[in-house]
Image 1 (cartoon, one colour):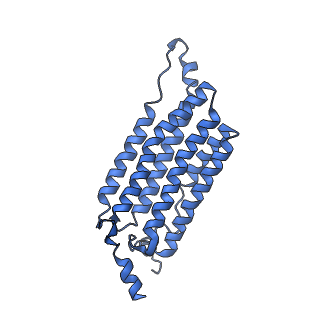
Image 2: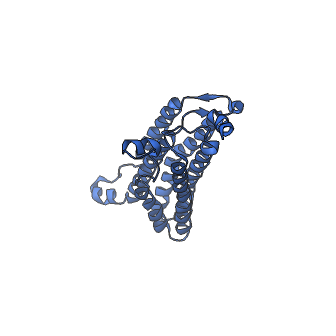
Image 3: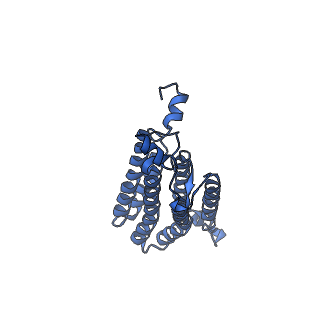
Length: 225
């Protein structure tokens, strides 16, 4: 056991050494902020102001895509912090994996625009929901890859979460892939219902993850370590 602790105490130098996660998190926060800001740019005012209320009402697909995607990006941001609150150091590979996740997040405004335009036109709704859901599904897959990587031999995890807590986080992340995949499948046949399934994923994941607080949270509540 001492030998195992020694191996997992510091990550391997094979991935370019380690760094404090602070800069990675700050950069990620910037990408999240830009992504949610871009969403509103796709909502354009009605052209006919003589029937303004009718025109505003006809924009419901844009409102739907905006609200679901804004809250989805916010939820991704929260869970991103849940991960990195427990990551002690980052290495080169983790930085690249995080870059892939951010690339997907930055793509979400485009996927939301496709979704809104499909419902506006009345054509391609099924394909649009599948495309939109697949973009979110990729983010869920990347979350699972990142968390599995940092959990391996605990080489990147800090002491703020124990193995039990890390397993609970992993379980919640795995459930996300199944949930979004179900929304994609439903949306391929019933587009609006598929969007609803994906949307219900958001409030469900506002709930804290069991074990998320780890040792730090247990100590704060006066529980034994």
